[in-house]
Length: 506
Image (cartoon, rainbow, N blue to C red):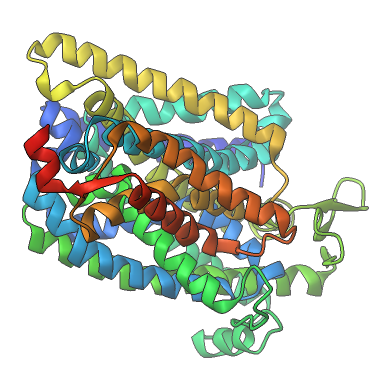
């Protein structure tokens, strides 16, 4: 698949996005940017959230992950379901009752100024790192397989990718994001389904039954790891998945900002429940795609698995040199697509990849702008609308620049599968948020507010030391609930009696 065709597809895709952006942003105001005027049908939000949850990481990393993890990721996906139930019936009623724009305002009402700012800071840190890592993967593919041949530097590729997001979100904000997510999720799911079908045809698998039999009967279909010492023991995966969805969705301004655009709490709960069940089957589709990619690559001699070398678990046949070269599992799908699979699959890959990437990245940039404006610049207390609009614009630019810098750093440090890196970051940065919200919801105690930032630094450090002492990362994804539990216990140590007593003496 040549660069001209790839760039033409990208150009057409973004033209469609810009048209959507123009139509949804024409009459946008501040409430449109932050909450989409709370007028979006729940089915639109639910469908769009599938794309936002998947991102370019799932589109590329999950199929590649099959080679080293098999289907073990499905245990984690089932854990997501449990977490989404907690969000729908515990967290959403709280957010709607308090009529929040930024969910971290709850921490100010419950504990005080420093707790509020700490929670908002950890969201900014978590989302900037997570979004940058996700977007890095997409830019890496765009650069390595398309733009590098044209002599474009990696930094310019990153700048172009971020500029596209900024242009179609800076005016309409969340209102634009939700409607473009609807479009992008459609592209994403269509691309995944077509990719499975086309590759199955290359393997001479006729019909869904034959495809499923091949996937289920493969060596990659193992799901359960029973070795308790293994970082991916099934219980650690299940608990990790539950707490990751609770935090990366329920305690995340980005994902909850979408839910808070629904008209009523009941609509938001319908959205969350329907989205969560569909997401199980979507992830299963991507795992099946991974199995088919490995089957195709190995059967043709284009891919050789090399599990003994964790730094380079695969080797690829370079079509230019005819030699095998080491690489990471994230490169499997784009490598086969751009070098060996038919052009039709390349078209599907380009559209699906960008739909997945931008369904996640556009909302992240909007949520970062929202959080910084409301949580750190006290937007709700300002009255001069012109000043607010100008400030919001510059914050949007600033968040774009920070994301740009983190992606360049990720390029230097990248040494693991990107989806693994996203979850590793989440286990440390979302743990304090989990502990803060849990303490607020399940106790009536106040805390010494000025000590909360220190608590939220100590808890992740303790978890890091535990994983450092056990060099295999013994806690695995269970690091997140352990992190939250340590935060909870430290908050208990600095508690000051009932919340009512605290408010009386404030």
